Every structure is written in structure tokens, then in C-alpha cells.
Length: 254
Picture 1 (spheres, rainbow, N blue to C red):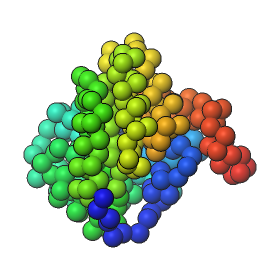
Picture 2 (picture 1 turned 180 degrees about the horizontal axis):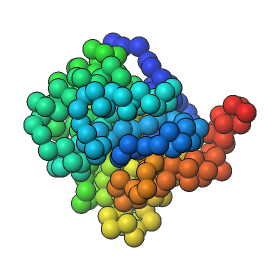
Picture 3 (picture 1 turned 120 degrees about the vertical axis):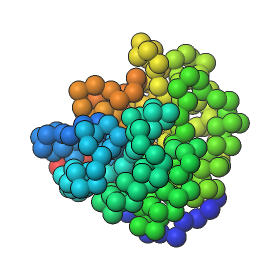
Picture 4 (picture 1 turned 90 degrees about the horizontal axis):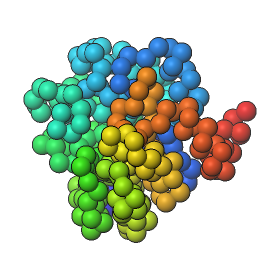
């Protein structure tokens, strides 16, 4: 694995720890009340800039500043990656460059054309990188997933994230086995539910931290960003009931 020469920041500290972490995903401009509540019940605020009403740097920097002390994760996905960004890759890289000093971590798709440049840019600003791999139709075989993890982490990413289709028991257990069998430790793994009627997407987000996934994603708006997401406050409650270490963190703060 390629080691990156940078100091750990707040994002590293809350994600790369024994206890689970929750990333609350924001897909639109939130109220101050919502930000305050998320700050008490989640460890990371993911800002899906491609889903916000504006993508100009001044607007996004103002929005990012509203999150205060909670670590922020910037994500800008193209339509092919499951997002709404429709401009060029050069424009996406310029947007990242314009806001990188205002975020604590960057998510970039492993197979995007700007992965190498975006990763280098983030590390120049001491910002950790999540290399994401999405499969909206299937869960690849364990060997293929592990190869992608090696590609991401050897390619300079600090964490490798996998989100695959888990609309059947077979796909769910395949994704879990990958997480449990992989020799890599910097993994974030979640399942998606397809039409939303399968329970395995939500189950993966609750159970996979016990198998080594470093972070789970929940939604902070009115509806899930992808099928299978739970609302952040629901996930926080279940994590407190399920994971003693997580519960202890919040009891210690009182």
C-alpha cells in the first residue's frame, strides 16, 4: 500500500477508529436546526455538491462553512456515477480545487478520469481521499472487489469505498464475505436495495461495521439519496443500542 505523507485530520480520527461512524448525506441546502441535530448524532457531514441547487465555489464554500466543527466530506458525482454532475471533468476538478480548503475529506470515483489528479490535489491540501466504486446492478465477485481495493489504496487513496447492489441474500452475503476476507483495513462497504423493497441494503449499513466497515451512510434530508439508506437519527439510535463502544462515546460526552 502506498503511504501518503500527510497528517491525520478530524475526518481520519472519527472514521479510522474501532467504533462505527455515521456519514449524514446532505443533498440540498439544510436548515440550521438540521445541521445542529446532525452534529449531535453523526460523525461526518457528506455534502453532495452535485445535488445542491448551485455548484459555484462561493456558494458551496458558504454552505460548507455552516457545518462548523463536524467533519465534512465533499462528493461530486457524475450521472454515470449515480449523481447529477453534467459538466466536464476539467470543470469538476476545478470545482474541487476551489473548495478543497473548506472540506475535511474528498470522495472521488476510482474509475473517473480525474481520480489521480483529484487525489493528488487533495493530498497537497492535507485532505484524505475516499476512492469509491459503485455497482448499481450487481455485487462483483470477491476477487474483483479485492482487486479494486488494491487499485484504490495503492493508487494513493486513504480509504476504499464499495457500494453494490444487494437486493438478494446471495449478493448481500457475497459483499459481507469480501469485507471479512479482505486483507485491506481501510474499507467502507455498504449495500444498495434496488427498488427499495429489499431489506439487505439497510441491513448492510447497520451490520457491516461489525465486520470492519469504517463508516456507514445515512440521509439527512427528506428522502434517501440511494435506496437502502436509513435516516441519520434512526441509524444513530440503532448504533447506540447495538454497538457498546459507540454508545460509550456518547455517554462519555454527557
